[in-house]
Every structure is written in structure tokens, then in C-alpha cells.
Image (tube, rainbow, N blue to C red; front, top):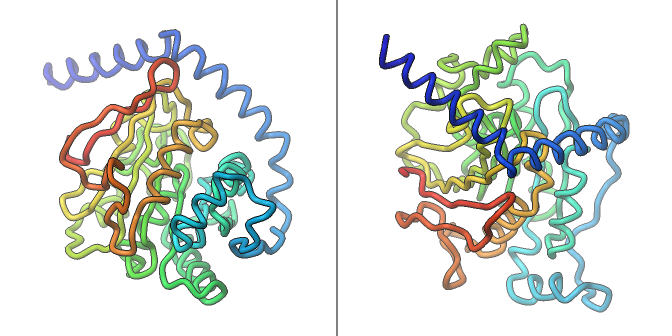
Length: 310
């Protein structure tokens, strides 16, 4: 008991230190500003999304960055990316991320929207499975990438591990996803929130062996994430999953999809993976790397890359 109290006290001290640091204060300010902006555009996400076109083939109107990706790896540029939002949210959380990905040359970025009244994470995972099959049929690609924010990452992971989704999802990126559950879920009295509590039945399913899983994982987590408690729950730590965990300091839960460090980590990963999941460019940190690396950024929003076993 004394040891548990000591660990809890240390966790609280670390959390307070992160919040009160200059980086934490700046991160909190960005979080509040983005929350206000997101609330203003939230109603837009309640309307049906317009159909998007495929990857552009006319290079004349594209920026040098877009042309570079398409010319360098047309498959990476054209592979569809599906965005999955979190609980009680909608596609507007990805407004900035979607624009950033398209500006970097990814031609097919779409959203999955599920009802805020969804009461079971498994139902949302089945909806994702249907959407992925439809996306593959529409685009001709056999595999797609998925980016999930918050609970959206758990929905996609359940699809991968429990519904055979690893045959379709090449790479799963999660942003602020409580892979190990979050104590914050105790504050919301709903079945969906209970499924996100540590030790829940659905999270126990995800801890089961997953031999031969073909999906690669990139988990982006923050030391200032107020909805993922403990913070390290945002990592993917599973012996059967090929994963890389990226820590971004001083960024709030809702701000992760707009943070330039997160966008850079996602873009670099998806632009340099071959069909087998291996990196195709020398010097790019591979998923599942056994070498801890620190990104060259420093100061506010510094990015730290660690292997899953770290």
C-alpha cells in the first residue's frame, strides 16, 4: 500500500510539473484556443461530408512538396487515409490535420463519422470495417492507413486485432488514445466510457496475443494530455505488435491533431513505408526500431521518439 501511494504521489508531482512548466502553460493556452475554435466549427461536422477526389495526377498546380511525394512514391501519395474521431466528437477535429496531409501530397484523406449515441465500441469498429471495405472498393487500394484520435484509436485497434482489420489497415496512427485505459473515463457514466476504463473487458481483449498482426502502429502521446491518465497509457506496448511511440511534450488532448510535431511524425511515417511496412528511405526511423531516438526539435512541443519496449 505504501509503495502504491508513493507511486501515485510521484505521478501527481510529475503531472503538476508538466502543467506548470513554461511549455505546459503554453500548451494549455493552445488547448483552450483550439477548443474555442473547434466548438465554433463543430456544427459543420454534423452535416454529410462531400465526396473527395482521388490523388491528383496533374502536377502543374501542385506545390514542390506535393510533387515530390507523388513523383518519389506515387503509392504513398495515393494510399487512402481514413480519419476516425473520438467520443462525442466529429470530423471537424481533423480540420487542420486533413489540410496539412493534403498539402504534403497525400491525395486521398477521408473521414469516418459515427453517431455520438453509439453505446458500444464494437459497433463503431464494425462501422469502421464497412467503411474501409467501401474505401478499398472505391479507390482500388487493397490496404489503407487509419488515423484515430482518442477513442477513435481504440475503435481502429479493435478492428485490427479482433475483426481481421490487419488485412486492410497498413498503418494505424493513434493520437492521445488510452490504449491502457484512462482514469478520466470514471467521470463519464456511460457504457462507452466504461469500456475505456483500465481493466475493462474490451481492453482486456486487446491485451490478448495477436501473432502475425500485419498492421504497423504509430502512437503519438503527450505528457500534458488531461484525458489520458496515466499518460503512458497513450503508448502501444504489446509484444506482438510492431509499433513506435512518439512523445510530444506540452500538448493537450484536443491539440494533438493540430500540433506540427504530430503532423510531421505522421507525414514522415506514411511517406516512407513500403508495402511490407519497412521504411524505404535511409535515415527514417523505422516502426519497431530498437534504438531510442530524439527528434531534432527542442523547446515547446519537443518530440521524443521511443521504441515500444522503451
